[in-house]
Image (cartoon, rainbow, N blue to C red; front, side, top):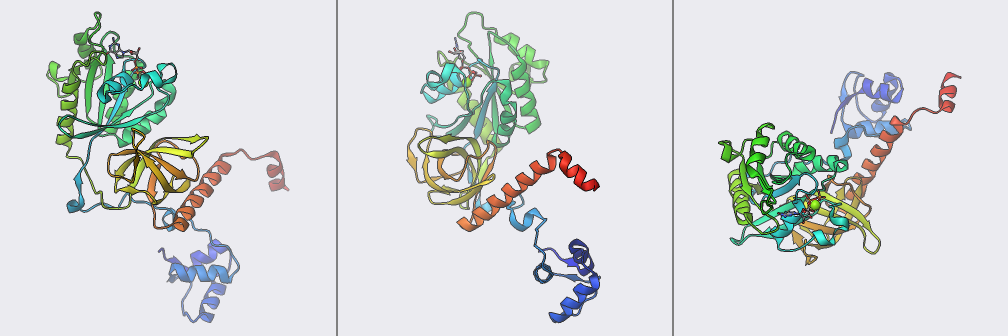
Length: 370
Ligand code: GTP
Ligand code: MG
């Protein structure tokens, strides 16, 4: 709790310092205007003078877990989170499909990815890898930039029959900005006009130097169509992951990131989240962005009900009070009251911010002059 001097508090309330000293004296405290009082005393005084308490510091209400570091001995290995990036139509979703052995492309309207999907696969060796698919359209740049924060490894998909395109460059820039290791998957190598060598050369111009060119960026020739190079791609991902020594503490209240969220007509607000640390359990109470909620049910990427989700696991969560935004943090809290308090505080702050940015109306300008 913050301490404040009597004079400072008097200034904030637009009262005389001496009056506060007098009031404190009546409460049994001998202090001068320059002395500090604690937060509880300050709050008593504020009420005594009939003012409303307005907390100004985020830390009074909001939660910040960024300084809450897990002890080394609590950390356990977790699967890598791999984001697939690349230009439109270069085969990101097809590659994921091939990796999952399923087919999402055909289910998508027009074959274009509208959302960032999250999937987890189990390799032949029993390792887990989490994949994030990203939409290929430029309008989603911001979402993609946010996505990079949960990413451990980026797989850059470049079609061997096309080349380095605007969104390829964008993906390279995001990856560099996020300081995340990259693996280049040169796709569509089954095509006759495929020219992987040219892709490697062109990547040099963007300071991506692949192993074949004596650099340290792993690259692999693949075909989502024939399945060529997929095992090799998985191997390279696992090699990179091993090098990163990815760990998280599974035994703590969960923290997760919203990958996508929507309002479902039947089920209400739905969010696909990716657990960063801790374990999310059915019944957990949480705050996510400006919304609060309680986990009513969770489904994995195959639509199967799960009771809990640990680090790097993507799940769809039911039980939100509203639809959060992609990139929002989900934090498990002690109880519903706390969740509501934080959510309401954040909503208030969001409204204040909007009001502050709204241009002053003529009415208020005139009344200010009068
Ligand atoms: P957006 O999500 O719209 O950015 O596209 P995307 O990168 O996910 O590409 P998608 O997987 O939808 O593939 C685009 C087209 O390329 C489809 O018609 C695929 O069938 C085709 N394609 C993808 N991979 C390969 C491949 O390895 N070989 C061949 N021949 N065609 C491929
Ligand atoms: Mg796609």
